[in-house]
Image (cartoon, rainbow, N blue to C red; front, top):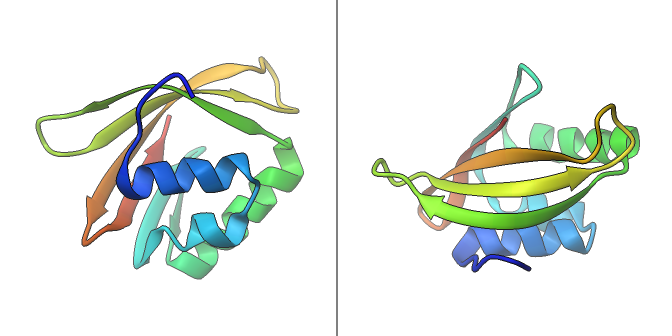
Length: 109
């Protein structure tokens, strides 16, 4: 990995690399929220379904490139995402908000 990740964000990307949707979903708080492709997904069960659907649809891989922490505490991970979608690969920012050791929100864009 080209960047140093830690905590639950590292756990999330480690699970992504192993293609372990259960472990990735477990990174989220029960009422966690994901915003991706102009959609809002709420709750761990719905997030797990979104992950499975995205993996089936795009067969994507994610490679974190760099990380930074904003003044508001959000952890931003810039990653290269490659898969079966137009213009692949693309570079996207994953903006994580962590509360109580779990991902409270994730915005991908």
